[in-house]
Length: 125
Length: 155
Image 1 (tube, rainbow over the protein chains, first blue to last red):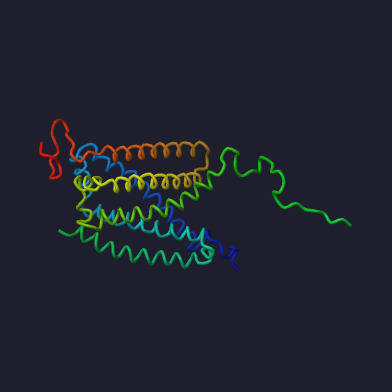
Image 2: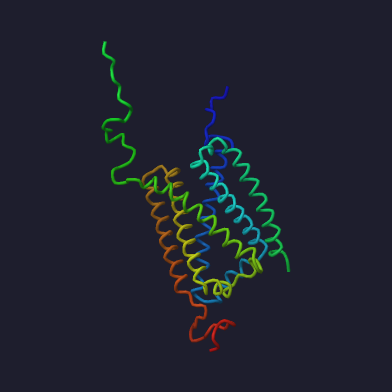
């Protein structure tokens, strides 16, 4: 018999790994946000300064980075709603695993749709 | 024989060394926990619309330039939208990173310095972003040279 107590939310398996992914995506998004505010602030320096920096992002490598960033944001958003349901919905803790697979499914659908559009923009003429 | 009465745990005075919160902290941690959930729901809406308009609608990310920003901030709705998004996202992110620092930095001095850097960055970014939104000029004149765009008056 396993020594691990049954039914814990944050020890092992889906509960723990979704928590780890939530932390990692959260930190990634936070550091992007710092840079994002700084580069957008260049509109206050000059139109040329802003366009030069934004122009340096318009290449396939940054395009793939944007895909990764959106993937992190969409996971953090959907899993965050799952955490809220675990905390406030009476049956949330019972269905936390099923809800994680719901999050993963919704994430896949969203990311497939977004990838088709975004990669067409990045790699298209 | 008299039945002994046993008090429920913590029903009496709790010795100071067993108190879980200092008297000055109050409900701060509970309010921070609640803020993460409330701001999280609002941020999902704010950021998903932001991503739709900037990455999917129109020409996608290739359409973003100074004129795109000027067009958006000509409307006060998007100024307020971006302002609320800036404040909520920065406070949500700062509280998240604060939690991570508290979890992993074991020395008091390490936590103090990491959080000092974090809070300084937060203040700088929020103040800078707020000033940029409200002092933005779509037709700036830089060193006597007026910006040329179809929405700007001819110099």
